[in-house]
Length: 156
Image (cartoon, rainbow, N blue to C red; front, side, top):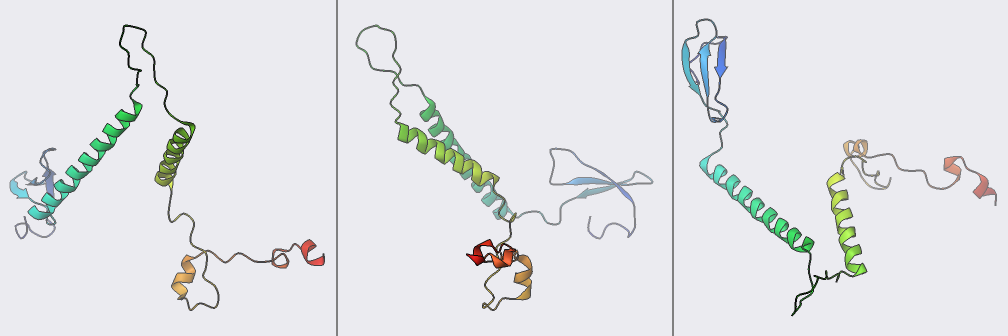
């Protein structure tokens, strides 16, 4: 539509939900069809191919993770040579169970972490630091008991 419309011309935009590559433009007053409009910042063919490759790699990674999870949750039974009641094998050690629980807790914490929630501490005073960096840091915590107003430790 570049160069085909008057400045300040009011239009109506219609789109088809599964056609994200173009919209249909109509004059708002008369309803006259002005033509299709395409995004000005559309990705190139190489960018689309790279995006599809990344998504396919992520799909394969997630499929491997799902397969590994299914393997770990499968119930194992003891081998038998004659018909008998199936016996479940419980060959998981305490250390292995704790290791798996620790990894799960760490993964959950990593997902919940907000890296810029607590700003970094201010650098020491003897460092040459730009004012803009000092403004982003939290103030240095006072050291010693006298600075905090607690004089009990200083008298002893």
